[in-house]
Amino acid sequence: MKKQNRSLNSSAKLLAFVYGIFISFPVYCILGNAYYKEYISGFAFLGALIGLIVIAVIPLIIFRKDKFKSLTACWVIGLLSLICGYESRLLEYESNTYIAEVYREPEEIIQKSGIYILAIGLNDIHYVKEENVVKDIYEREGIQIFDLHKITNQDRYKSKTNEIKRFLGLGKEDFHVMGQNVRGFIREDITVINDFLNRENLHGDSAGLALGLSAMVHQGSLHNRIPIGVTGTLEPDGRVNQVGGVAWKMIISEQKGFPYIIVPNANREEANTAKVQNNLAIEILPVHHIDEAVMAIKELNAR
Image 1 (cartoon, one colour):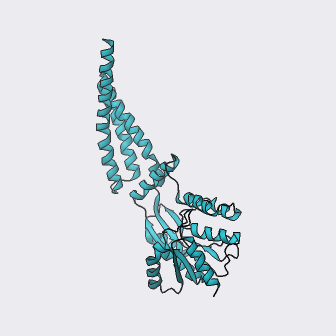
Image 2 (cartoon, one colour):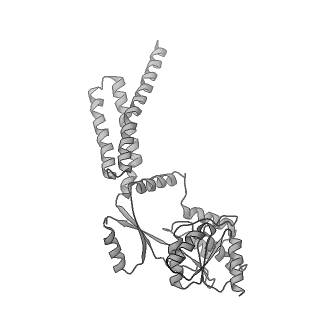
Image 3 (tube, one colour):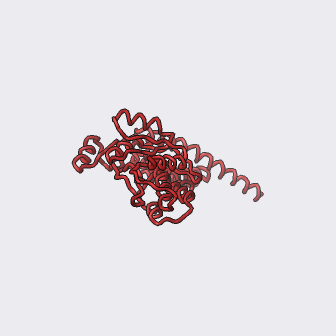
């Protein structure tokens, strides 16, 4: 008899759990969809979830003597609390309104190597909602702004999800992955490169190729006397993959007076289009592999 009662209790608990999911999940999906489509803010999203938790306490009190109903209410409260905790990080991104792509000075980390890392500065804009106000601020400060991206709730949600993944060890930032790839390629501890890879607040993986070429100059296997802008990822086996912001990096290179820019072959079309549209004189050197970049640099220096 006791065994039968335990079996009934287990079935009741399982059914209460199923009812808890049945009630909580659709509501969460509706609110999440409303947030994702910009109908509500992060504060409204979290506020609604908290409100539902409070509301779920009412049937818990009313039906406290009914084990099944009270257990169902407990599951609803518990599930919504977990969801609320998971989504609470959205509030950290609520103030982000724009990301500004701005000029960043090319960097030659191995002195007199002629290899310049090309990068675009990414600045987070908070609270300012008017695009023209942001542009006016940068113009007054004398900072060249290439593009301005309005942050959407989709962007905020993706950022929050990626942050949680990295915290749980399920994902890594592109800059960190690039560092591993570069170290895997050069197979040597070079202080200036390690210092660069240990910097904080750097993002992306487009410095990989330039770091690999800089390491070769440091090691003495490559000699260069021509200033060259370089952008591209670098795999441990030397392959070079596509990067972003090539058009802006070409403009930066032209402004700095670089006669050449090395880009991934995957960015060849984008680079050629930017050259025509902006009437640039810089010569584009597309490569699939770092060996092609080395060969191109040696040929340029032999002229």
